[in-house]
Length: 228
Image: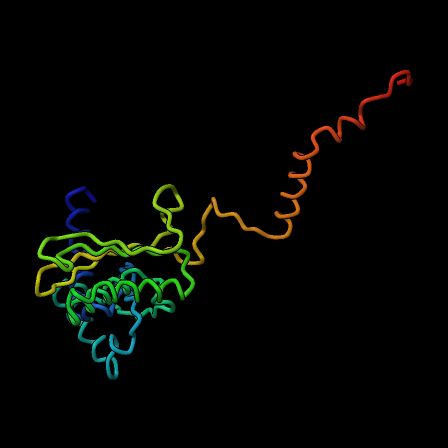
C-alpha cells in the first residue's frame, strides 16, 4: 500500500469514527476503535452510558451498523459496546460533560462546573488532573483559565500515562475550547518512589553514618605499640 492510499484509508477511518460519535451524540462516546479481521470489521465503541447507545432491543446498534454499511461501503461491520468502568478517569467523558454543562447553564457557571469536575476526579482517586478553558469567560475578550490539582507529568516517558482529550462548547457568547488531562491511579511512573518501612529504615541507617563518619575509622585504626 503506497502513501496516497494510506492517507486516504486513514482519512476514511477518521471520518467513520467522527460520524459514529455524531450519530450517537456528544457526551455518550469516549473512543471508537476499528479492528480488521478476516470475517469483517469489528467496531468497538467505549461509552459510560451503554443503555443509551444500545437502545431498546438494540435498535441504535442496528441503525449504526446500517449507516456504516451504506455510507462507508463495509461488507460485514460488527458493532460492539465496551463499558467504561471509571468514567471519572476518562478525559474524553469529562471534557464532553463540561462542554454540555457550559451549553446548558451558560459560560458564567464555568468555575463551578470546572471545580466540581476537578473534585470528582480527585475524589475518585486520580493522582492529578488539569482542566483548561479558553474563550469568552466571562468577559467579551477571550481568556484562558486553568484548574489543576495533584501531580501531573508533562515531560518524559511517564507523560504518556496521562490521558488527554479536547472538546468544544458552543455557547451564546462564542466557542469555548476545553482541554482535560488526567493521571489515573494505576499509571506506571518510573520516577515514583514508594515510602515504606524498608525505605525509612534504610534512610535512618544512612543518616546515622553521615552523623558519625569517624565511628568506623576509630575501630579500624590500631593503637600505638600494638603489633599488626
